[in-house]
Image (tube, one colour):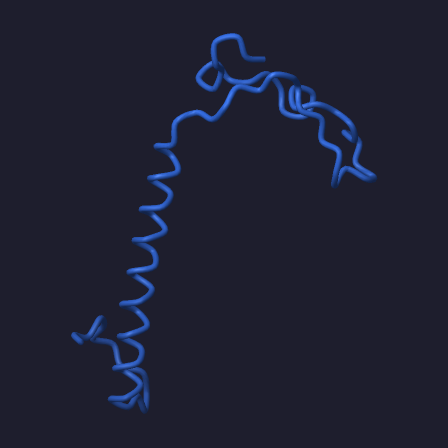
Length: 87
C-alpha cells in the first residue's frame, strides 16, 4: 500500500504507518461511497402523490406545532415537488 502522507509522527513505527495508510484508504473509499449514495438519492423520481394533508401524530408532545399538517409546519409544497392534482 502506498503512503498517503510524507509527514511522520514522532516515534511512528512502520506498522503504525501501514495501519494508518490502510485507514486513510478505507476513509476515502467510504467518502466516495457516501457521495455516490447521495447522488442516487438526488436522482430519485418524485414519490407518490399525497391525497390529503399529512398530520404529524408522534413526537410533537410539548411542541407549539402539535397536530399541525405539513403545510402549516413547512409551508406550501415547492412547485418543483408538486404532482398534477396534488396538494
